[in-house]
Length: 128
Image (cartoon, rainbow, N blue to C red):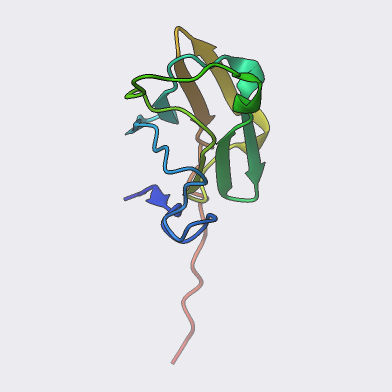
């Protein structure tokens, strides 16, 4: 069974894996053809997000510059800011065919799986 292990508790600037305490929600699905990560990123678009694949480690982080907001909040309950999430992927991924899209504040990353065919092997019986 392939399992996607979450690494962001091991990496990050505050020991919890999140640079500013912002933790975007993510769903991870396993299908027969791919692993699909769906992350809620309200108010962000593709220019605000960076995605890297290094070996089997998939990193998703924000690149949104919040320093340009010069307004003063009277009430600020909506979460936002920079974040970094890292996922250790199984060995059956096709890293060359990873796709990502962002629409309506939802990021979808599709990591196709390799088809690993069982190779036939002839077993020779040794004489005793």
